[in-house]
Image 1 (tube, rainbow, N blue to C red):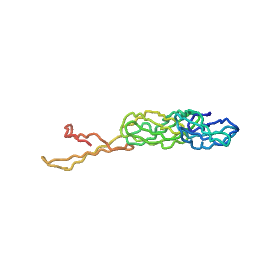
Image 2: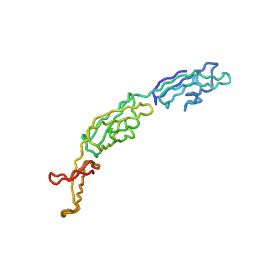
Image 3: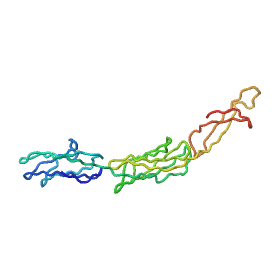
Image 4: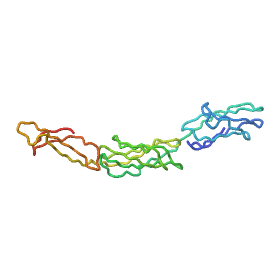
Length: 236
């Protein structure tokens, strides 16, 4: 009982050899006791039966070959063969971030590439900025893709692209720094009573807006002042 190859998604060929008086009949290849899809009732030819399968997941598989027997030869089961299936290692790279730098609340595009030896990875990549912003490259095309990310806080972000792996390909990740600048703002103030009289309460309202291309809703506090005299501070 022999096998060739050991990569996920690449054909693993199992060969069962039956000794006897010109054996005919079939061989059923089993993985841990369960028939391997597409590998049951494989016909004998020249004392051998073969099966090629490309759907075994990564890991260790205990494979046996069960010969059905015929009118002359009794059935038999091979000794178990341990088949180790591995995933190809991958390298994930963030190839570009645009614009660089960006502004809080403004979308920017992160381009990624996933590579493997002698094969093109498939699957998805999750991109995150480490502070709550994320996007997903749902399907790699020729091992590459991009998605649009929005960071809602300023600072130097460590952008991480995490490839989740797929049949035949191991997971991997890559990082790249990206600067997110604070968005410019405008502040205006209004009064509910103008003019007012001495002794009457006056409510001042400050409105803080974000200047394009920035986005989001400003937080923080506003300090109201009459010249150099502070009247009070309020949270947005």
